[in-house]
Length: 457
Image (cartoon, rainbow, N blue to C red; front, top):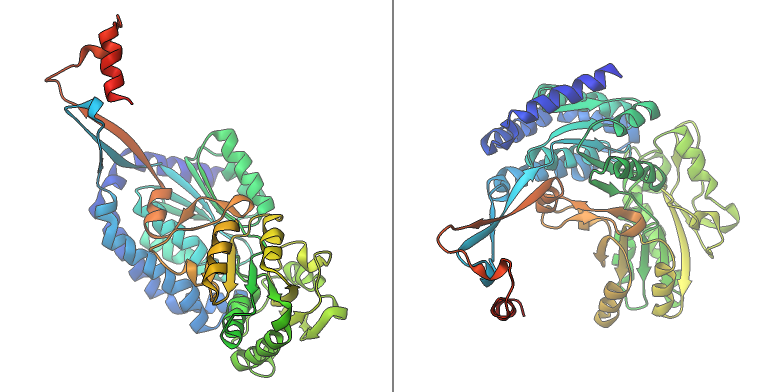
């Protein structure tokens, strides 16, 4: 594909000039990038509404505003992050200094998904560019309207030798994965993640995989039920359930199940009115294909609330399913829809066993006021990240890395973690020429061994 070859060639030539190592250049580019986004902010909001039915407030809170925050962080900290970092020098290396030099990988390929088409494309882009790399951004074909606005922003803010946006389907993805690039950052499904990982392994290049999984939401009998319901509904229905860190299923103590379901229903009505499916601020499923998959998870025999669908508008009413078991289809894979499966437990050890015998989720949510249990689950359960007594918000910060664990991903980003992800740290020892200790050189004598053992013990 000639256009991809031309992009790669121009970016490699630009990277060789060393311009991306200039901190002032990167900082000014990021400042201008933010100004350009602001210029097209209303168009972005419209695009996100057309693609996913997102409201203006949700689009800003969960996509646009978070990208602004990431840019702000990098603009503020890029100088410090880009400096060589001094480290301790062992006494055996006397008259030397040790340090690490941050070095960009070169050309980064970012492959972004459709569910948060702006945030999950531009957030890693900001981190990769701030680290001194050039970027090829391959966006999902499903978010067509948002993609067109992002194209305007990138082409206005950057030269194609710095950052380029690429459209296309499977053939373009495959061609990019086979191309001569230096780093791959992928957000999407586990199955496609395997293909990306294999391609990276064959090329011997580093990769970050931001995947997903069935993120559990645990509610025990000590939880503040009304507040838990409020925050669960927020996290589950954000983007109509199409969030990689959405609380996938609710695992609650059997003694509070009925009360929790009652409060969840109440919160659905409070947050989305009596008829959510016709609420203008309630989203839709991205495509017909994804819609059909989502409704296949609904077992009408177990639906106790909701269940209404609108095929023409690709809308699914918030739906609660009770008495769900691990054998139900809804528990076999990540839901990505506004469906609340409810399962129950008697003892907290059941929760630990259940979660740990399945693939590690991207997120883990636990509603409880029992500090001893909270600490137990945090230490014993395997997951990427999460919240205590809330959902979703752990990813909305530049001060912690966000990423998966095991089957839910490899690596992390956001803030310093994002800069580190796209940076190789060269470890350097700068040795003085004044003294040269003879003990390390052949021929070895007993005195050599004694001296070595003095330093290395």
